[in-house]
Image (cartoon, rainbow, N blue to C red):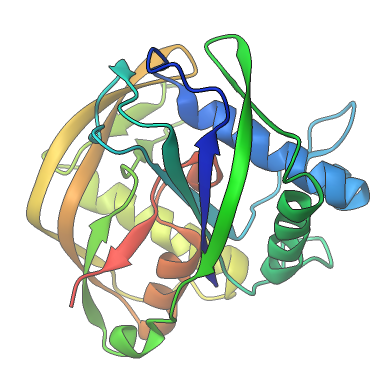
Length: 258
């Protein structure tokens, strides 16, 4: 399930800059909406005093008109933007919670607080107006084959993690990208499908490298169009829940290219 929320800033002066790490603020905004609707669900997924580290079956992306992927400090051109959230109906490992339950909690949070939405940007709380929500038409029919052309709606993060070494962010131009991208896909599939023995291939078609500020650090990411080869149920999982690292924080959402 994929839904786009149309939002606008209530008191837009035309001088609002989008901070480099805005995805973290959107992520916190989503968690707060879930908390307002289902505080028990929010606590199960993220914890209270102690942080809960569980894999969650959703991803999101934002579209601010006039701002491109990789822009790290940009002045907003309009008072409106969209927030698209994608969910897969998979059980959260170790918890009796599925992705649709998270979606309904988020949607109800929007409805219950539509006149009191607050988004923190640049250290200031901004009032938002909830305009409408639109559910996307399912495109599962286009991913019934083992090779599907996809494009990023949010930059793709692939991370190399080795014992005793500092994690390294890889772009599609790195020689180890394919290996670690496969590890990421297999890990995601193992968590939600219980399947880990299958081939995966990433073929860039029209990709570029972007550098993004995130958690006060500069990270390397990939954006653009690529071909993904994997079993259809795995590609469906990637389409619904995202690809790569930090999917829940606004990275790795993809769309099908017909």
